Amino acid sequence: MIIRSKAPLRLDFCGGGTDIAPFTDTHGGIVFNATINRYAYCTIMDSSKSESTIHSIDYNNITSFSSIDDLVFDGNLDLIKAVIKRMSKYGNLNRPVDIIIHSDAPPGSGLGSSSAVCVALVAALARYFNLTLKKAEIAKLAYDIERIDLLIPGGLQDQYTAAYGGFNFMGFGRDKSVVLNPLRIDPDIINELLYHLVLIDVGKAHSDGILDEQAENLKREDVIPYYIHMKRNAMDMKDALLDTNCALFGRLLNDTYLTKQKICSRITDGRIASVYDIAMECGASAGHIQGAGGGGHMLFYVNSEQRRKQLEEELTSIGCKVVPFSFEPNGVETWVVL
Image 1: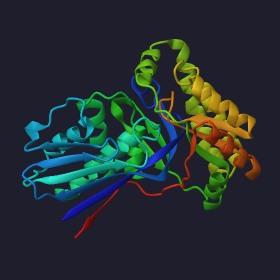
Image 2 (image 1 turned 120 degrees about the vertical axis):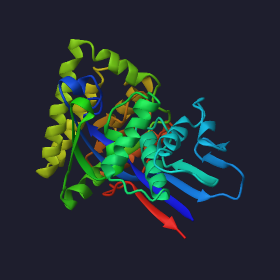
Image 3 (image 1 turned 180 degrees about the vertical axis):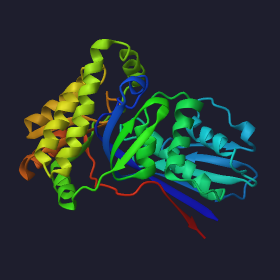
C-alpha cells in the first residue's frame, strides 16, 4: 500500500508577522493570503528493507531508523523526524516504511514550504494510521511540531493555510486562537489578479534569524504602529477584492511592502532592493516580499501585458526566475495507491 499527500504553498498578501506572539497576545493578528498550485508532497510506502527510511529529494538526503528512539534531533531532517515522533502517539509504524518528501519550492522560499511539508506528512501519517483528523487538528499538530517541539520561530498562518487552502482572511488572538474566514472571490477577479500578478524567485533563500530579530523588535513601542497598519491593510485588501477592485489591491500590496521594511532592517537587502527597483522601472505598480524577507520570492503587480513581458525579461537577465502559478482552492489532500 502507498499513501500520498500534497499540501499547497501560499502567497502572503498582507499581515505576515502579525500572527506571531507577543503581538497576537496584545493586539491580535490579521493575515490575508491565498494558496497556489505549488505543493509539498509526501509518500509513505511499505518497505522490503529491515529499517525505515526518510528520503528528502530536495536535500538529496536519506536517513534510516529502526525505532522512534533512533530519531534524534541533530540537524539532519529534524522536521520530518519531529512529525514522526509526534504522530507515533497516535499509531505505530509496525513494519518498515519508506517516507519520501519533496516540494515545489525549497525551504527559505518565503512561500510557507516548510510548514506545507509538515502538514503534508501529518496528513499522510494520519491516513496511514487510519485516523480521522479535521483540518484544524492537522494544522494545530503541524504548528506544535514546528514551534513547540523544534522551537522554530514563526507564526500561525502557514500551517492553517496549507491545511485549508483557498483565499483566507485569518485572525489570531491570545493562546494561539485562530479564526479562519474562507473568502468567495469572484472568479473574474481571480482571473484578473492572475493577469496582473508576477511571482519571482529572486535567486537566494531568505536570511536566517530575521524572524528572531522581528520578535525582538516587537519589544519596541515604535514598531507596533507598523504592525497595526498592516492589519488595517489586510482588511482593506480583502474588501478590495470582494468589491472587485484589483487596482486598489495592488496599491495596498505595495504599501504593505514599504511598511514591512520599517519593522526589520534585514527584510530588504541589496538584492531585494535591486529586484524591486528594476521591476518598478519596468512597469510594476506594486511589489511585496514573501515570507520573512531577505530572499526567497517576490510578488509584483503589473498593469499591462507589454510591461509584464519587459519585467520578466529584465529580472530573468539578472538571475531571477519567473514562477508560473494559479490559485489553488483546496488544502491538504491524501490518497491511496493500491
